[in-house]
Image (cartoon, rainbow, N blue to C red; front, side, top):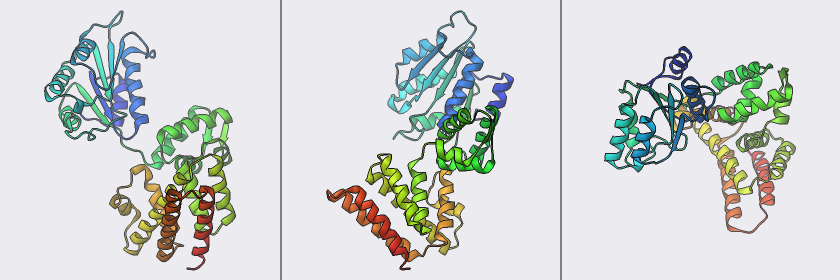
Length: 348
């Protein structure tokens, strides 16, 4: 049966267990977290216990059958954990056999299937997707999809994690940390842990975040384009120097900067046609955890003319051609490009 994260958490807390769990979705961090939560309930905190059998990718039907049907050793229960079960790699007959085994799991066994490296709709035949549809009606199963969380939800988790570690972080700084890590829940968790270890207790400040967290390329590029559009040439060139100091390839920097300006162009067109940021996010199929990119682009284009944005995209295109078709120094090309973006802005 299909369930929600909230219902899943409540059931686990109260000890209501299913024999089959199937976890998938874009939030890999939550997927793996709930695998561990189920294991805690089934076999305890020692996940390397002899009664935990792990399978990965493709395996024989006999291996799955033996893993599920064998009795636990010196315990009342056991778990079979299967990562990235890809039914598209099996024949129709074998995929039906796997489904049958997982429909008739003995009471002393709990099976956890979770996807982190594949998506249910990734294969041509879509057996995975069909199997998920079947699982929505299977009574011994808890099926849960972990969709991407928005920035506000992740910020709440950052605040709770900080509090659990004896620290305090304001909502504004939590959101700043989340956006700096591109709304990636795994990165936000790691960086929050790091900040708490550094601060020990008390308040985590914006200065702490700037000093200690790893700068993501997209975040740095947004800061670069923001400096350009605000006319701060010195700051823009310092950010560019910092990116070179991190040994990031010029082509990667240019690609990210070009993507930013394409976001500006989409936002400018949307504004001119009275399209909201939410509708723009949907129309251009932005991921949920990147909705903030659209909002920032809408704010930026309020001070930019469509003519400038079109000219800027042409400048970036020419720079891309130079990097890919000549042996000219990449750093020099990017520095020249940044200066040209400034000079062009002053003409509109």
